[in-house]
Image 1 (tube, one colour):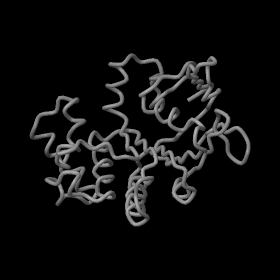
Image 2 (cartoon, one colour; image 1 turned 30 degrees about the vertical axis):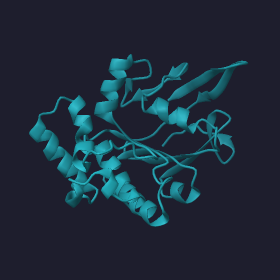
Image 3 (cartoon, helix red, strand yellow; image 1 turned 120 degrees about the vertical axis):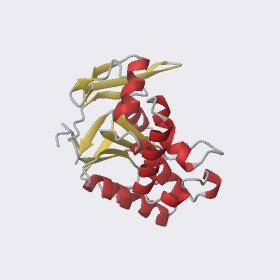
Length: 226
């Protein structure tokens, strides 16, 4: 990302949130982004995840310019190349873990048998092979987050985004999820994580701070090279 700007209209005009932000993440790197409430972390993760577009600037994903795609193009890249994990899990209620994990494959028009096979494999990867038939009411918070991670991984995306992935978990469940992120990093997965927790951020390869609309480290603007 180079020169990313994003503002939102308010009653008094435009509120600048990102003001010329630069970010470069290497393949296989785990980057943690910290910032105070209202610093623009959610805006940044939404732009990286193609849920929002910048007002100005360039966003290349795997060398492809994705910052100005239309809704259909953004949805295609998001479903194929980006996996997202949210603080509140965002699981479908009254739906089994297997069906939740298989949901992205529906949009990819994957055949039913292949959806099941790939969803089962993703659940096994996060240690929940024996919970495929459980719905969210039968799962702990840590298990729900692992289902959400399996869903994010089922399409084998190039980039995994995590927005406060341990924010709603107790310490034991949070540690369990972080161990899984350690394993994903060791397997070469590229991860960008938003967190307010310094201890969580310390697990990443690199830590950046979002302040005044740009990424900084040690009080300086961050060119964000790996």
